[in-house]
Image 1 (cartoon, rainbow, N blue to C red):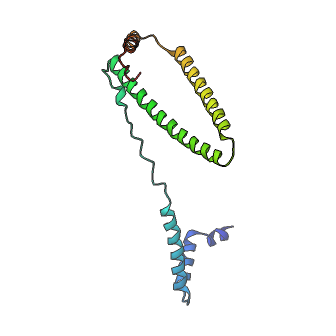
Image 2: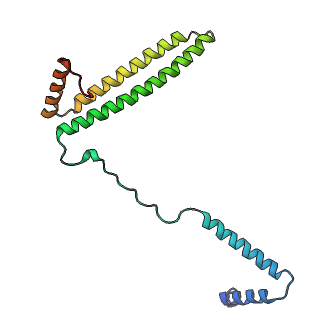
Image 3: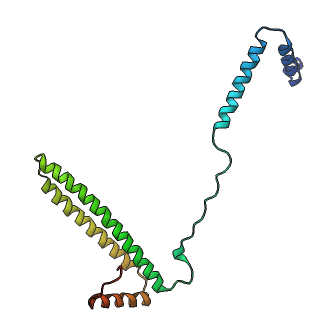
Length: 171
């Protein structure tokens, strides 16, 4: 057993390597260059792989709408503005979708397909979906609405302005 470990010792391996490298051979330099090229190629490919450390932590962006010191009236005004902006965007999207539906309707009518029936069915289906969504929104609001006297006073003021003929702001 002792003879086995003498043959596989690291010291003996280094001596054998030195003898092989030192032995004259016509392929010695070609073999060394190939070994260096393969080893270098492996390390080059490994270096091109990603994974250099941990990613940077995300930057936190705080919303200015959550700034301290805002009054309820300012909050309501900002909410009305945001709601008006969202409704305008939804109206633009619906307008674009309606133009596309009209184009498909014209193509269908031109090719002899009864596109009017499909258009009316789709219109009724969209109206039913919109009514369902609106009912769910109202139910959710009623369930979670907190009594806020400032908000209610603002709503009454807006309703009285709308009733007297002045335009309501952003609703």
